[in-house]
Amino acid sequence: MSTVTPAEPSVDDRPQPPAAAEPVWSYPSSPAGPADGESLTAAPPELALSPARQGLRFAARPMSFAIGAHRRFGDVWTLRMPMRPEGMTVSCHPDHLQSLLKAKPADAPSLTGESPLRPILGPDSVLTAVGERHMRQRKLLLPPFHGEAVQQYVEMIREVAEAEIDGWRPGAEFALAPRMQAVTLEVIMRGIFGMKPGERGPMGRMRETIRRLLYLSTTPLYMLFELHNHGAREPKDLLAGMLKISDRQMYAVIRARRADPGHEQRTDVLSLLLAARDEEGRPLSDKEMRDELMALVLAGHETTANSLAWITERLMRTPDAYDGLRDAVRSGDEQRRADWIEATIHEGMRARPVIPMIVRMVKRTWRFGDYVIGPDSATAVSILGLHHRSDIYPEPARFRPERFLGRKPGTYTWIPFGGGIRRCLGASLAMAEQRVMLEAIIRRTELSAPDPRPEAPRMRNVTMIPSHGCRVRVEARQSS
Image 1 (spheres, rainbow, N blue to C red):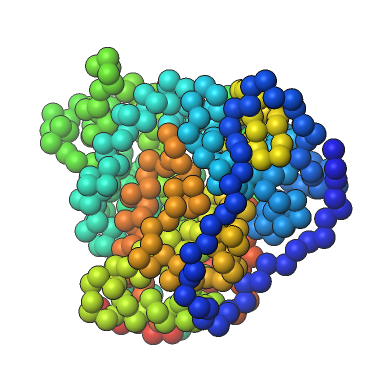
Image 2 (tube, one colour; image 1 turned 180 degrees about the vertical axis):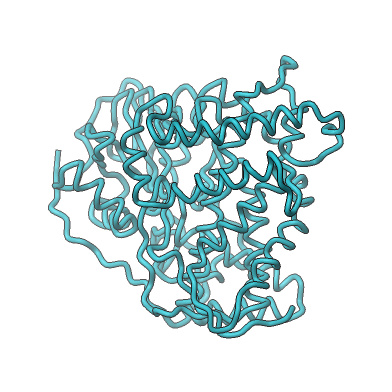
């Protein structure tokens, strides 16, 4: 096994001048997939660092850590972390990703069941379940999150976004991420639970408890809870106490909705899930409902909010991209506006994916390029490494929305929502929120970065966030 003493790479995030039009690039193919009967090879190269130091570096500098590994080792390397000191094989090649996403679920199951979120979400969430249970839960959840179903929430999202921006005053400085989290939480409460603006009672109490729980998850103290609960099947100690309160309130809301004779006419996700039946005609139990709703709250809250923060952070430090988007949004040309917003979101999620990797456990001998690993081996695809390949995205450190003008992202080269049977169910809702909120921000405000230096990425829980929450200054505000 080869090791390399690391030299920390630099990732050039400084504003860059406009580049030439995007050429058509392609990447070299690489063999990947089940390799039964083939001999195992030596493990891929790895850093000459202990699992603890690798874990700390990944948490503190996830981008330079992942992109640096790709630069040093190529498509495949070994990663050792405190939670998996035996190591896992990491790749950033599209063919390797495709082999995992198209594999039979039994051949390459997800390792999300080992996620630090499991004690919170429980075993019945679509995020933590695997195998047949995951497929059952996914089928039940698909209808409420279909693209057409999400469209009914767009006006509500716009109302929430406009109300938030109404409170921004010229000269104010603040971190954008918490403001976006307030918006996404309000969207969740209205769209998923059917909460009315200003509603009190059980729904209002549940909203406040969820808000406090979500805030706790953003504090350094939560890391201690997370470490203490790692590997546990049930939450422990203070985390268990907090969840007991939120669970009591959520179960009360579920029971009240079940008893509501008019719930079948409602269009919120909770009511739609109450009416859902699997192939054998079985509904979701209260426990399954709780786990799914908690997953939707957590997955739909922080990820979308931080994606919006990252997109804004990149725009504030790329004047030509900011100017191009602003001109398109205010041009009066609806198609141009829509194209630029979509391209900017795609480029933002390429440059700063909130979830930096996906993890699988291959149950058969598997090939990744020049390496063949044995069964029952943990593997990962580095989304950061994949999204910063120069053979797919020329000059990958540049923030260039024009990459995606008139061009859809590739199935195996752009994966901020994951892919295959575990692709994020809320992707359509997340995209709708980002379109509406980004359009409102650009149309109604002039923003700048108080500090022109790029905000460094760091890890919080399982997400990659801006180190200062995307600090912005409101230079001016438009009335509409």
